[in-house]
Length: 179
Length: 380
Image 1: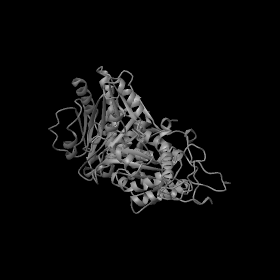
Image 2: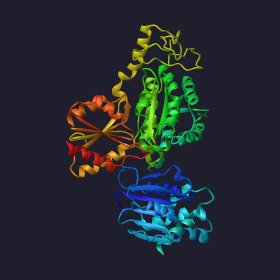
Image 3: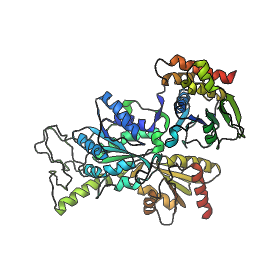
């Protein structure tokens, strides 16, 4: 996919690893030869509660480094969905965890409703890899970076000894969207 | 193979500093500069350098001065409250011509202010935070890549002119991660301080031997003894209260900057040739301004930008020349209005100079810059 500038917001609750997921997404973009900027919110909201990471990916230079109208929102919790869905682009893609019950208020975009947290817990057996599953789903849904790049980026960032676990999680994320 | 990688601004600062030859860091970590201390602690020992976490910011600045006097390239990093505490010692470094780099990652102030949020409130403090007439250089990066380059430049300027150099960052640039391609070490220009001839019989530490206003600097431990004092001193380094000694010293110190403006001042001009409205800005706000300019140009509005890379000494000449050509100058800054006063002082009185000020802990947006440009044009 070639695009001048694409804005992503990855959100959930603090500790779910979404900032790391944002960093990995940006690193995958660079592996694909694109430009990327990643930023996150600091401050009280970064501890517990809703937290977010933002990534801009572009084939060109990135001037303004902040996300203003995300084209893609990934969210794992209801609180984050409420808080971070107010400024979405008209034809956005919203990737939601199926555990979120109240989503009827969403009035735009393409909604991809998938069991990310459940897959982490039941299929992979580790809730901690939910962020990597989410990343796999995001890449499969948007094709913003190549699967090769995202796999390489994931493996470069995760702790030694957890490579297989994370690879499995990433592939599970691909499957959630592609099935 | 591309060496491109994703890097955080604070990380690029440390990488650049080490590439420039930094071998000593003393600091007292403070958000949003903390990663600079963390990464210095991690990386300096790998190159034979030393990291010390001191008891506070004042001591950190003192340790940096001490390390530099022994011949090491030394740096500290802080944010607003810590920058205030370092000021007295920055003055000591300035008077004694001790090369050092002080990174100030600006956050919302005054006082403890907004610890995690961006601002540009230290434009004036960076120049005049310490008392008395003193030379200082302040440079400000607008990207992660520039943070790397400017960390090197900060050391080079500091070593060359024997002045403290302030690397004035802001929270946005410090914390964002961005694609960077680091140069090959062989491509990096490194400047080292001038040293006295080892065979010198009597070394006067403050004598202008070469007539360029910059005395060669011995290192403590080299076997060439010299005296360092916060008092006004003569060429021997010992105190004096004589008017002519004082005048010579201050004139020489200020002259190191004033006689080398072309070398020190750096800025980028974007589409200014035909611009009726020119945005003068620096740091992260320049990124918003650039977006605004690109969008406004699509609408046929003739707008350009002068992005200051060197803030102090202030690039008066380009502002003066631009103000004779442009109808409007807009100065967006994340403070109540600081840079704008210097722009006004430098500009032609016929030019309409307008501020865009935001001091709520958020980056000025491209939309806000665009709205201000349109407001100014429509009012004229």
